[in-house]
Amino acid sequence: AQSVTQLDSQVPVFEEAPVELRCNYSSSVSVYLFWYVQYPNQGLQLLLKYLSGSTLVKGINGFEAEFNKSQTSFHLRKPSVHISDTAEYFCAVSYIQGAQKLVFGQGTRLTINP
Amino acid sequence: NAGVTQTPKFQVLKTGQSMTLQCAQDMNHEYMSWYRQDPGMGLRLIHYSVGAGITDQGEVPNGYNVSRSTTEDFPLRLLSAAPSQTSVYFCASRISADSGNTIYFGEGSWLTVV
Image (cartoon, rainbow over all chains, first blue to last red; front, top):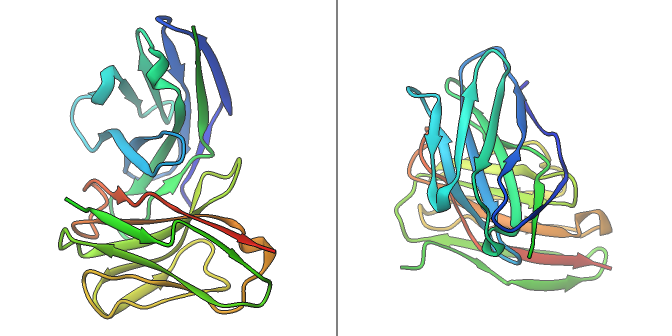
């Protein structure tokens, strides 16, 4: 079965510093990969997704992620964070074939300090 | 531009009571789903539907029922609430069962069972 592991439950960084949120998945078949953001007391919004093609995916708010098939990873990066990026970030994976359920990681809470 | 609408936003139940969380979408999406979010566990799929009249179980279906009589609505029923069902519930929809399509989330329903 597919599973997703987000390696850090909390990541504190200073404003304007770079950040990387790590995500690894386990699957023996082709998958789609997603990053979602959840601001306090809100639902989830799609940041970016990898379906096929270029392994570097750009999303909203200056975020990007790189799909690495050999390492089964999909890490999220931003070169310079802002206070407004404070939120919880979820990595998710879905099989391309068969039951196309979206499986989420445990979440990483990103805290930006001034 | 309503998107996915969930009601109620907050609810307190006593153990053994029943209730229904309502979910409606106005985007003519075929696929709808319910997730619960618990600290440190990400989002877990409860039930999903790939179209009117079709429902299936997700990862954590016990204690919950669903039905899909129309394309727009996908209510989640708790028949006999238990404290373990204290959680934040999210309804989500996407245009089709193809998980490459973006999934849209409601703003959540906070449920406390005492």
